[in-house]
Structure formats: structure tokens, C-alpha cells
Length: 132
Image (cartoon, rainbow, N blue to C red):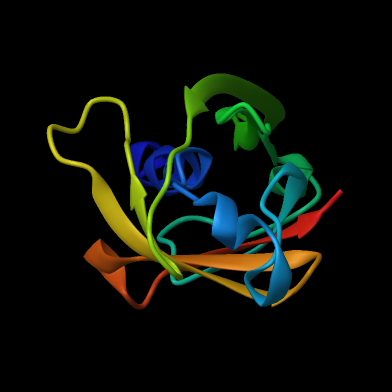
């Protein structure tokens, strides 16, 4: 179960985004984002611990993340780094460590300060982030 959580949270770390997608109606993914919602992600609820999870997308196409989860009653963190690269429109390609093939999904900006990622592998699951 923990692997599913980390997979979906790690997926968002490696979201691809083109320079054209960084501005305008599609939003600007560069910056630090906080996890605010997890819908239909097995075993994941956003609470005081998991709600501290962040992802930072840098202009040089690098990214870093810190994800929190409750283990044996303690809130613990796991950090990761990666890169993001270009894709088209709202369809993004995600490179996840440990997977042979990139994972595809859709990123939708509901405002300049909020986006939701829906992986094509599980169209009923989503993770939402707000700009920190």
C-alpha cells in the first residue's frame, strides 16, 4: 500500500511541462506546491501529516519533493529529486524511477495556484496541489 502512495506522489514529481505551458491559461508549474487532495488513491488521505508534502519545480527543469506519511504513528518524510521536460497541452509524460516506460497523465490547472494530476493508468485517481 505504501508503494502505491509513494508511486502516485512520486509521479507528480516528474511531470513534464513545456515552456508554452508555463504561462497563460494552463498555469505556471514552476514553484513549490503542497499536496491538498488525494482522490481514489488507495490508503491515502490528506491529513496533518501528508498535507505537509511538497513538490518544487525549477526553471532549469529539475525538481525536488518531500513527501510525508504516517508510519507506526509517526509522521516521517522521504525526499526525492528528478527532472521535468516538455510535453504537449495538458497531457504530460512522467518519468518515474523504477519503471521501464514513462507514465502519462493529465495536469489541469483550475487556477494559477492549483493543479490536479490524473494518471492515465488510473483515470479515477487524482492528486491536487496548491502553490505554497
